[in-house]
Image (cartoon, rainbow, N blue to C red; front, side, top):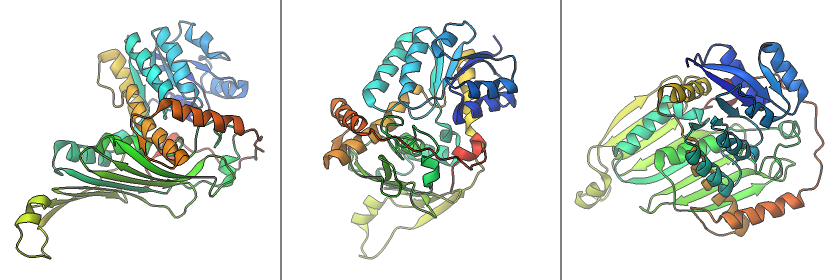
Length: 390
């Protein structure tokens, strides 16, 4: 087999973008052979781009058609694990969009099904292909920063207008999306946080629900995390602030990293801070530093992750992001919600039953119908919508 036969589940914004990437030749080891969507108009638009592709109104019919080796799942968040598990039952390889799901138990069950099926399972964490994040991870994981002290990430350049939230009935609802900025915009950042710095042991969070928009879910978040080692993390994000900031700062015993404005800046201490603190004879002295700076244009990560998925199936390549890793960023967001709802600390792994109890209550309470507005937006490429904005 020289190419994998891919079926796309959901041909809305994300699914149609991935479809176009394949049609444009960005993923040479992939052929899209089937599409599934409940909206006939979306299927018709896709069909016009590639008349030979098979279209299905029922996803399970596509999975049983024998036309695909792998599926890309790009539907609303709650359904990511649902369709992934159906694929695993049939021995079909899976690539899911972020987030992995809405609640940890559902995602954990999906991961267990994937392991049992023995197929390839990836998640579209395309920002892991950004050279600056890759370099930051390499520095941190190698120990070059020494014992880690603190991560601070201010990522407030996710600005959205009310028109954005009014453009879809599922947007910014507990029933449709399962959350707000933490579930829609920030999953990439939460993934990179833990991918580079590791998972915290507990979370204290403050989520503001409908602070800047007429929505029920959170549009402003501050998270404080603590680690077994004593390291800490602060994460701030919102869709209601402009101009926004995207600044990641990581401090360790041997120096500091700052990622901002498309650059990675690295200050290296010539003497580790802990050693210098207790050996220096002057009260106001500071250790000398060396400085390095990196700036490299980020590639379009979506087709890279998708082509890597095909290479993993065909050639046994290592996946850029294993699907099972999606539970890490989701555990942080689940813990943030629990902390905010209960006005208390939340441990990681999260209390799955407590999270689901609160989520179910909010879903039942959310009974108002959204008035949808006509969108004046012009279509953006997948790259533009989800590239790193500094």
